[in-house]
Image (cartoon, rainbow, N blue to C red; front, top):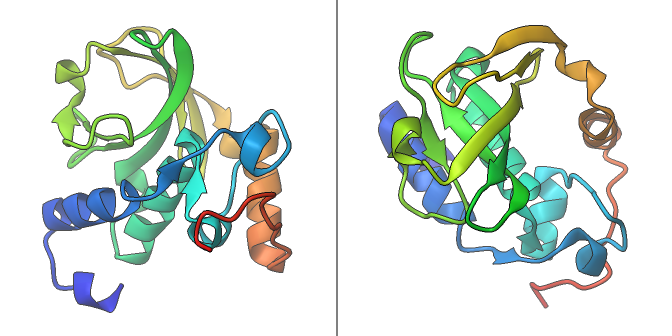
Length: 173
């Protein structure tokens, strides 16, 4: 991570996105034996695999570690229209009113939100807040604290305690 510290925020976004997009996509049922499991970045790196939430969470925490402010980042729960399934991506806002850049494991190219017509945002959150999104163009209406999300709370608890879980299958072995 220290080799990334001198980079601009845009370079950090690109480097982090490329690094994590090399991991394997594996469904939670196969990897963790659960319908929905949000892995910590260490669990994700240790297994070398995860689903969309794991990619997004690892990118989020890595960018925070590299000095990108939390207020510029949001984890966004979306509907991937072409796949007809729910999905998670990371949004980066260079300024509060800027159009977000989207970091995604399905599309390796970072694109502006307006260029991602294949995604319909539902809600977003960061380390502090939770927003409900009413339109594709909007950043959302504040709906409270991100602590309202039980999977987020579970992940943060495991991360703080270092009580990490082992996957059923390790794609790094």
